[in-house]
Length: 317
Image (cartoon, rainbow, N blue to C red; front, side, top):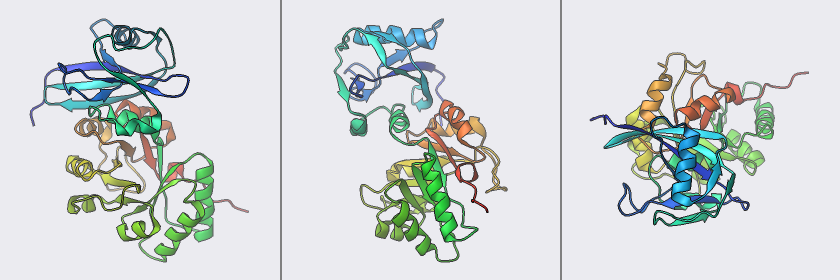
């Protein structure tokens, strides 16, 4: 694959108004990817800081004087003619009235409607970071019985976990375990059943596909409204997940993991090289915990997936 020699650093702002709506710019007819919607911003020029570049761009594009807020994430994205790095900052305070000063359309969008807008590949993961959980719990096999496992899952949800892969055991009454988890906790979190498409359809929950399933499937395996995710380890897996229309994928292992001791770790550099070739929202997995979320977002992930680091210990005594 030809690798572009031109690299650019773009800084974009997530501008939120008092009603919680987010501002999008529409790319004009004489620009790359004309007609697509994006978070406003532009190229960082030599000698500029990210804050200076974004403040200048927002004044030029929208006519506002913005106070540049917290860093959100960075997305590396490979295009045919360039290698782009999109740095995203939050904007909650500004003066002036936003308007399209360069002839572009602008619109204020409720966060839950952002997915309806067609965007360039680099902007798609930003929507996921704004709208979806930054942690994805993968459940371990029950070691101390079903009741204890269900209690631990409940405590994980109470701690703030919102998205869970139910990795049911290959032995034992796996169907009973899945049913019990959905019955007790299905209203409190997004549940995805590992690999079992038929059971996911029956229970009306999401499905998390194995890498080998990705390569065999030709269409989305569950109805709209049920999440589809996948485990990916290389570019072929990622492209298959994107082609299938997965809502997100898990990529790794990034670091050595106790759950997969023989798997070769990708490292963050390879993770980023894979990330930049798809627009799919990604979680990083492998030896990671909540303390690595910031690092994961610097390489284009929306967060981390984990078993042990996110699973509460069993209560004793």
